[in-house]
Length: 264
Ligand SMILES: NC(=O)c1ccc[n+]([C@@H]2O[C@H](COP(=O)([O-])OP(=O)(O)OC[C@H]3O[C@@H](n4cnc5c(N)ncnc54)[C@H](OP(=O)(O)O)[C@@H]3O)[C@@H](O)[C@H]2O)c1
Image 1 (cartoon, helix red, strand yellow):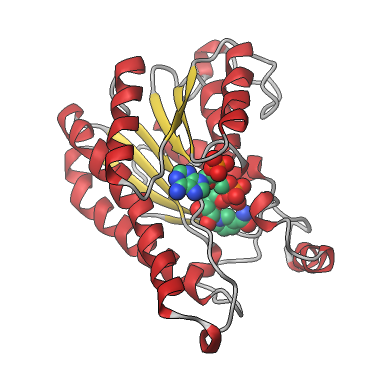
Image 2 (cartoon, rainbow, N blue to C red; image 1 turned 90 degrees about the vertical axis):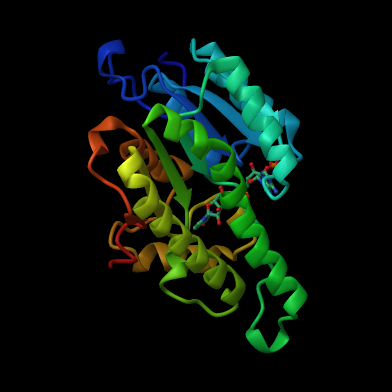
């Protein structure tokens, strides 16, 4: 499986970290989700590649995985729609078996604006959509994880949930809600053998951040101890670390993956 572009081939078949695992990655047609789907597959997981609009992009991730002897399927679902999420989970379980690893990376877009210009309807849409995007997939998958007495859930939060930034009031508030949700799940599901963690990326170069001026990205890189912006693969690496059994005593964590620009 050396053709997948996420790693340098240093893992042998025996040392692959996700062998025998079945993962669903939401928002996996692009960005952080796509890099994660490829890395988990590289490490031996079979992967459900969730997308919303972008079938071609999701299918190209599946093909990249298959070319490298991995197994994956692209599954369309709007994560803010409970019925679509249920159908997606059923389809992946029928194809590959019960999902034991859930990565929540679908990106709920939002308006960047100061509070004074924000309308409640836009604010509410971000808050509700962000939380539906974690609530519905968890609701659909946690029961089978409880039955199996094992499972791992990783949600993508943001450094902005703890460090506010001008114009990001809706995003920051929504991700803070996600953080609280994840901590509560970790508390409730720990005794049932399920680990639940959050990753908090700093600025990561994906389509979601391409609108930012070059100067802003460069200034952020210079303010970052590791002196660059994150790539999706940097976030995927941390997700793999938390998903793997090597992190078997780690739950309820909020892990910044920011090159050091956000330290707790
Ligand atoms: N990029 C950053 O700097 C950064 C920093 C901190 C946190 N994050 C968080 O990281 C996560 C991933 O962000 P990203 O930058 O990788 O985003 P991205 O490159 O814009 O990709 C977004 C992904 O989400 C999918 N998606 C959007 N709405 C969806 C829905 N309703 N149902 C299912 N899938 C949906 C898209 O599917 P289609 O392609 O089919 O539309 C796409 O696969 C988000 O939660 C984001 O808030 C990102």
